[in-house]
Length: 78
Image: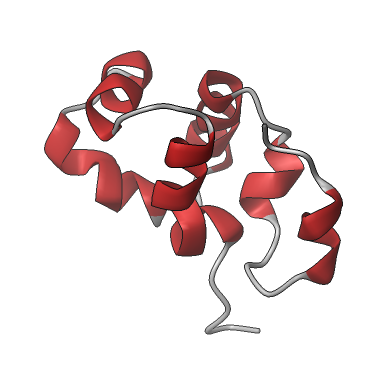
């Protein structure tokens, strides 16, 4: 699973839309510049992912699950 992408990396923009959040607002709440949001989607840093989960009000487990994991479908994001 070395090539496998995390849910947040694969579907970060979709998750923001589902939460009704723009990249600019997400960036402000994360304390980063707007142009760094796409880079943040690819992070494997659990501290950053935990903060992203808090901002998005979703379980950390959703962000760190693999994008192709069927269990992620059982997590409600809205």
